Length: 573
Ligand code: ATP
Image 1 (tube, rainbow, N blue to C red):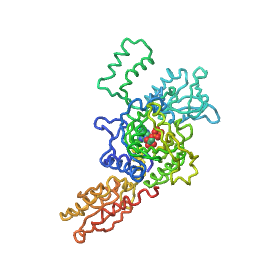
Image 2: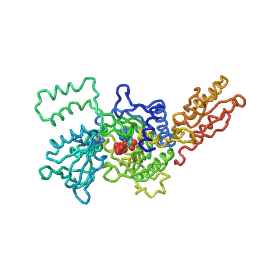
Image 3: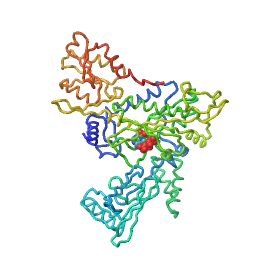
Image 4: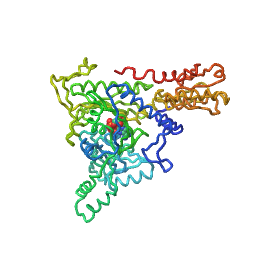
């Protein structure tokens, strides 16, 4: 199956079996908004829980926190988000599409053989639109340019072109004109992604934060009264006046969970008596007004993050940065079937925030290509310092006898340890994993089409047992009433252990019931049959091998627990 077709089949399965629904579908839906159905919510919770277990419960020096989503202006002003949390935005003057230039492809220019001239083909959705676009180019966007049509394609005739790549010096496109003179339009290394149109606005920064107002009285009324009525100032001045009026009630939906951790640094130190190095973990929703929403839940305005801020002494920070890069990659690999579909990528210096000292992405090979699923960054002491400056709070830590953490003693990356008592603002190593992207990546990784000889092809979702929404399905072989007490006994023993267990008493053949559970990734099926009545044993069937074994009813929960958790976090130190 081609990649795009496989992805559609996966999304279809997600809808059909209750993983993922379009939000507000009965009202026409909302683009980029998704609801997680009964199985999706379990899968998401299980991934988050695995992350939490590994990063909090398995360690002595990491604690959790859960901070407010609604964030005051001052916090995000201090962190730099109000002024700098922007993406570049470009509008296409022809199609009205809006896109991010850093993610857009270079223009597709078909050069005439051995010549500098050639054609740029703009793809329109239909012939009618092609006609309208041809006129718009000739009348407004490039008056006098030679433009022709070929079906749905609108062709620009190009004399020559100087190419460039995004972020580098501008190039140009010289168009042929009916008068024979030159008509030049700028080229910045990209075209509108859907149509290949080169008629674009300049780039402008676009702040990704959702702004709202915490005010019982509609602040817009106040704005109108105090600034707009009888105002003769220019638009910029009015905008500044409006912002000033709104400022006291302006809040944002947080764009990352991290800032809530930084502003609580002293509260956590005080209440938990923590000593460096230590971490604060947080999982929760973040919001970004993304310019382009894409690939189902890959990029959405509302998403969840699993973030760990790990605070270290500056002399250990490089060693810890290396440790966390390795450890986070290990978690990804531990839970994936196809290890080759996960890789890491170090950021170039010009990709990083100016304060960051290093950044590595974990990427997954999605059906449309490699995409970031997690970032691990050395944020230096930038965030804590910014909040100190803005508030007067002191986040410095005193180390009486500066030392090196025991298991970093052999690491060459540890740098000059001070010999006397030292005060400093800790360095932060952050790992920031997108929960929804993780869910999508693990679903893609698990989705397998199985073709057995003489049978219809069917789907097996080979999710890691720790992630599988339903851990165990219990099936009476037939409707025999004598099976029921055994079914309930096994179900109770698993449910008491916190394992999501369903009783599958449908009147379907047992094989069909197994297949229905393979399709949603249930790793184990337990069947109660006539032999159970005689010797209190049941069969346990494994999703991946389809093998079945008889085991005593009393061993079911310990065997399943061992299979799910037995090899968790193998190399954690
Ligand atoms: P991208 O370059 O894809 O926009 P980013 O570098 O801005 O991502 P970070 O700020 O590093 O992302 O956020 C950490 C993680 O949060 C990302 O690795 C991703 O998994 C997740 N994430 C960020 N933005 C979104 C979004 N709009 N929808 C879903 N997940 C997101």
